[in-house]
Length: 450
Image (cartoon, rainbow, N blue to C red; front, top):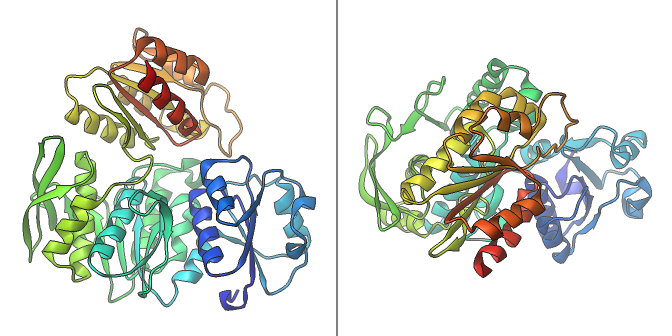
C-alpha cells in the first residue's frame, strides 16, 4: 500500500485512542475520512466536530458510497478490538478489500522519519507525551501519535514540521513489531494481554523482538531490572545509567535530581505527581539529552508539562479531592495509590474501580485483591467486557468476596453516585480503562454541590 496514492480512509473502530489519532492525521492531511464505532464518546464527538463522518450502527448499508467500491485510492483500517463478526468488517473482506491494522499504517507513516518509540505494559502514554512536550520546548517541532489526550495540546495527535516522530508503541496484538525506531524506550514488561499472548514468556519475547528492531545506529533505553541488554538503563536507583535521585515533595510538587554518565541536573520540578512518573521523566530526560536539548529547555519542559487526560487528572482540588486515573493493571493501581497517599497521607482514601476485561480479572485475580485491599473504602463496578464474552466464575463480586467485607461494596453507577452524594468522601479516586470515565462529570457535579 502506497499512502501517497490514498484519497479516502475508513476506520473500523474509529473511537479508539489510537485509531482516532490516525483519523485526525489523515483528515488534517486532506483525505476524506469516515468510520464506525459502537458507541458515541467525547472522543468521537470531537472527531465529528472536526468534520469526520462517524456511524454508530454496525450495518454495511451505512458505509458511505465512496467507500463501497474497491480501488487503489481507498484505505481500510481496523482495530483488533472490533469483534470478528462485525458486519462492516465482513463487508470489506467479502468485497475484496485489503484491511490494515492501525499498527501497520503507523509503520508506513514512520518510514523515512526519525522515530522515537515508547513501549511498555504501563507508563508508555505519559512517557511518550512527556518526550513530545520536551522536544517542543527544545524547538524540535516533532509529530506525535499518543495513546492519550495530552493536556498541553488537548489532542492525541501532533503534526510538526520536522522529520522527528514520537509514537506510542503498543504491545497489544504485537502491534509494535511494525516499527523500526531510531530511539526506543521500554518502560515495563509486566504480564498483561495474556488473552493474546497466552503466557508471560511470549509477551517478553515480543518485547525482545521490538528491542532488536531499533536501528543499528539508534539507541535503546529501558527500565532497570527488565530482561534486556545493549541499552541504557534508567530508574530511581544509583545503579542505573540514567537515574533519578533525591526525589522529594515540596508544597505538593515533586522534585528530583537527574544524573547520567555525562550530565548532572539538580532540582528538576515535575508537573506530575508520583514516583512512577518521576521514573518516566528520567527516561524522557535521557531521550531529550540524546536529542541535544539543553538543561534550560529540559527544566522548562518538565515543569510546564500538564499531563495526560485520565492520568492522575484532578477534577476537584479544594478541601475535598477527586482524581481520575486510567490505571487498570495491578501494578498501575499500586503506583497510583502510592502517589495519592504520598500527597494526602492523612485523608481517608475512597476508590471506585471498574475492572477491565474478564480475562485480565481472572489472570490477575489475587494481585487485584491484594492491591485493592490497601485502600480505606472500595466501590467495585461490574467488569467492563470490551471485546470479550463473560467468563464463568469471574466477576467483581468474586473479587469482593476475597476482600475485607467492611470496606468493599459492589455497586452500579447510579448507586455509586448516591453513595458519593450521601457520604461525601474527603479523598476520592476513580480508576479503570472501560467506560468509568462517564462517571467523572456526574461525580464532579455531586462533589461540588454537596
